[in-house]
Image 1 (cartoon, one colour):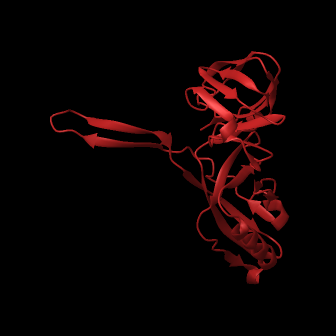
Image 2: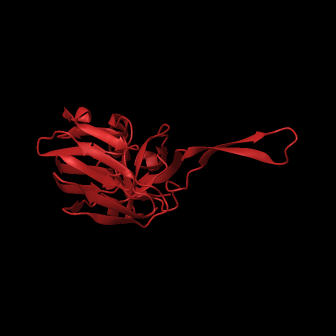
Image 3: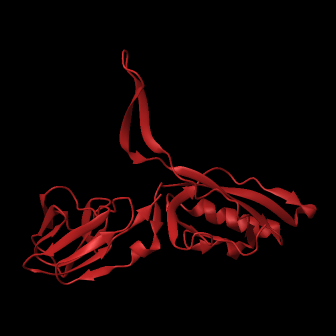
Amino acid sequence: MSAGGFFTFAGRSSREFGILINEAGSMWNSPERDSEAVQVPGRNGDLVIDNGRWQNTTGQYVCGIGVNFRENFRAFRAFLASVIGYSRLEDSWHPDEFRLARLAGALEPQLFKNGLTGEFTVEFEAKPQRFLKAGETPQELTSSATLTNNTLYTAKPLLRVYGTGTFTIGNVSIKINSASTYTDIDCDIGECYKDTYAINCNGNVELTSGDFPTLKPGNTGITLGSGITKIIVTPRWWTL
């Protein structure tokens, strides 16, 4: 076991529970492409149908607790059980990245020294993206500009748009018909809102061409039209 390694899940660190982690954990394995092979009579080779997505991946942390095992393990198990759905997961071996994961499987401890110490494996199921923490840094634009995506994958940004009017990202134009200070446009979930979902703004936003904008690999131009005073872009860069 390595005393220096740790992971943080749903805002709490494994170190809070006295957990030591084996560095050889497989949590950060690459996902599998969602595709299927179809055999066509009279045609050599398989026809591959790509579904345009990556599948979830699973991985493990091999953990141990060296002191007060029962107390620490029970507290840790109770915490994991209280987390519903996907939450942020990061660890000390990948300091520049994080994943969205959920607990998968039960915790089955192996006890030693009359139950004073023990080992167990924590298995997570994670969404395929390895999100880059650099992609969480908001970029403020007060005039037209170009953003560069240095990854190989298309990002779906969060936009905070100030004012009313039209702006363009790549080949997608968006018109804000009315707004109170700003409008948040979440290009991942396809929703427009204000104050963290408290106010639905979908009816105030018009996609005049295309779907919600994305940031493709390479350069994407952003043009602020009349009435749009500022756009804050959180790019959400990711890789596999």
